[in-house]
Amino acid sequence: MNIILFDTEARKKLFPLTLTRAIADVRMGILTIKERWEKITRANVFILSAAYLQPLYETIPPGEYIFVDARLIPDAALIPGITGLETNNCLNDHEGLIAGKATIDSLPSIEQIPSLFQNSSAISPVRRLTFPQEIFQLNEEMIRFDYNLVTQKRIPCDTNDTVHVTKPSQIFIEEGAKIDFSILNASTGPIYIGKNATIMEGCVIRGPLALCEGAVLKMGTKIYGATTIGPYCTGGGEIKNSVMMGYSNKGHDGYLGDSVIGEWCNMGAGTSNSNVKNNGSEVKLWNYDSKNYITAGNKCGMIMGDYSRTAINSAINTGTVIGVCCNIFGYGLTAKFIPDFSWGAKGTEKYEFEKAVTDAGNWKKMKNKTVGETERQVLKHIFDHHND
Image (cartoon, rainbow, N blue to C red; front, side):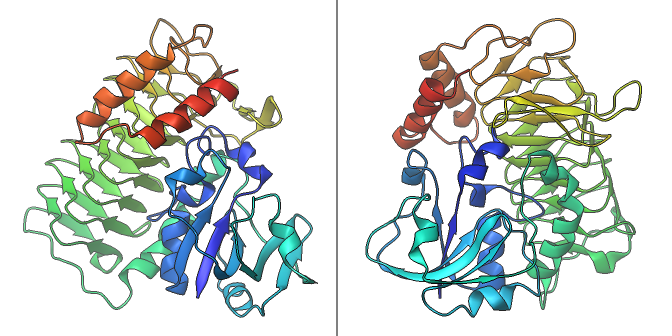
């Protein structure tokens, strides 16, 4: 069985996070959406996104595929209906195509996908990931879902005698992980410690937590709420109900709460975000698609696109959206919306493109990576077409 996870125009509602990646590459819980479908179905899973992003992904050869809306939140009752689809049949709800099976000779655009199917069945509405804040709002559910997927029929590695553990049956430690003189409390949710992850001395962790491969928690880190520290991220200070997708750093004291941080971001020492308004009212969050503020619940910190950074002691306003490749510095609270390639905390000055790419490359070198030509072209497309 082969699956294609496809984007739709609704990907724009998830900007800035989906400016630099397909929806299927979004991490929520332990896994990305693509990784989750691979584990659920054991199928070959491909990604189909906007034309400028497609070179980032594996070539899709001709053949028969089940097309699945990448925003779909998996449901145990829905999976058999999708994997059991007959050729040329599809499932729809009030929002449109959910999944369909078709044979293709050439790769369609994302706009052409609904026309591939001849027979349509309407079903009850399904859940889809729609807005960036839902990534942290749904993170507890997805950690619990992924924990069962990842750990079933497997035996975890043991902790050492210096680690205090509560409810060990809900703690899974992968090979190569190092934990010393710390507290792991899984009474409120599972704790997953990925391969070669490190938890330094004095960390206090209350689940649910996903600490992914190669991630590091610095000494004295406090984590609670449903938090994901993605692959090769560094965590420190106080972190609550947040998702760091991968290769990003919050290595020092300061608060990160009810937030989503993309890849290759860095928060300078003392950076903190507000996640609640002083008057306790609903938080409004800028949305790229509607070009307006939308309600995001009573708690919402920040949404930060890939390759963005904050200077030391940055004060991030409640419900702040920071675009791709922003360099945040300056006095006082940040602006509520800081567009892509911004220079400074107010979003009024522009980051020169070549300098932005050079600076991103310098940060990637610290983790033995480089900015490849395909990646550079994606950033250039964003700079030329979304830099407003």
